[in-house]
Image 1 (cartoon, rainbow over the protein chains, first blue to last red):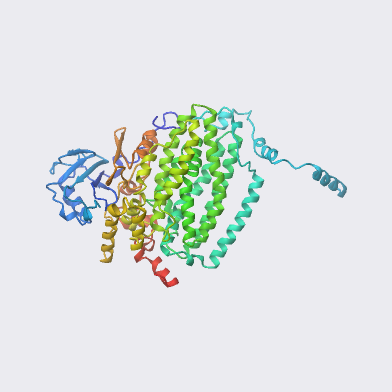
Image 2 (image 1 turned 90 degrees about the vertical axis):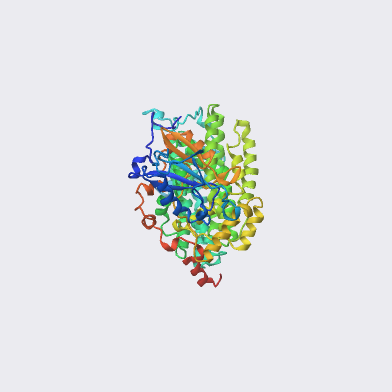
Length: 120
Length: 511
């Protein structure tokens, strides 16, 4: 049952639909096995932003706050869209890379095991 | 009236035997209710059937305390007089200077800003439940609990008022509750319960929280207050405790009553118990952190408290309920796996975002890190100490580390998605669902199940981070949002650099 409500056929207003974000969409971004950042990030981004621009202009500066951030070899990282591995096209937009509103993008950096190998 | 008549009446009055407790209870509860005739009962009480709970006989309701309103006023006013006398004495003697350390006050900030508005919400919730249920015994019990909760809120406001004169972070507690990102965790928990029907509300609050989980809030926290010299909070705790035991009994009674009324009620109640166990457990994340990190003198670890108050005591309760067909709440095994991690994860969240919180955080002292390592031999040194070492090193170098972004939140508990996979403490746990083409994300299987149970309810969640990006929180920059929260610079940031700490040293000469 979608809801237990007094009124039959009750539906809720979807509070986070994409129209509410002024032309942006949300993309969640997490760096696997790096928990110094306590949780993944919420990023408001233009859907037509090229994936390469996301990496260069948003993710690189963001991960610079981690002591291993500068050591990431971006040519060799692995990406997941949700749970599934995928190969992004750096020239193509987020939308064309299948990253829609409220999608989850995960980064894996084999060889970087966090502070002192503790996955922090 | 002549003197003679008055004398005669007084004599008759004296000769009339006093009502027995049982009769008095009947007169002051059951006799106050009646079946309506001008309007059908279903129109007068339109809210007590849509949840699917079937009640055949409201007279099956037994109030084990048999408390009546006149006795309630008498007992509570006596208790209240004592409580306020002690709060007065605490204030006049500058009792706040006797707490173990000003760091402790941050536990109070979290408790008083997080919980006091919930007491008020509970007052409203039980008033609504009392109005909604057609059985008079249940209505009277709800009425008393409603007044209890209002009293608790009032006494906590008196405590806030006192601490607010000396410490930062208390001043705008009511405003913070509606806006601040982490206070949306307790707020949304309670609003979830209040927007359900009366039976779910009472199962959520009276049974799942008050009966199953409240000991984890009260016992360690009130003993924590005592250990840390906070007699104002201890006194409140003792005063509230006698009410709490009545609330717990109400919680158990209401669940047993529903189960005894009709077999159709069992699956509904089990679903509520599963849901509200997980919702309450996630809320207690904040308590785990208070126990392990925020009380400078520690009573017991979160892990020990969970083992005693949930695994042992709660386990016994559910064994007792097995004869009704009730089983342990779903995902209690995951809670058991998390007990080695919960408080460390929570403290990490607040350390990350201390620039936007009304409490201070800190890296624990070396002896405190050792205590954590001793209490958490399977997790602390391996998974958590390295981050504290790094943070301390950064802070010592004058670069207090903070998170440069905004977190991803769980759609249900609204806590940043910081919890790790039950079987892999190195990796954040991601759970996902799609509903009408929209994506929703969760911190755990428990929160995902809550969503799937009623997606049309939770698509409406007011998630603080999303609200910021929608432009509903004062502006697009961090200073604008902090201003909208009413967070002043001295309310937030590391304890080491705080005005609270500087004041404390000036007042006490202690480090």
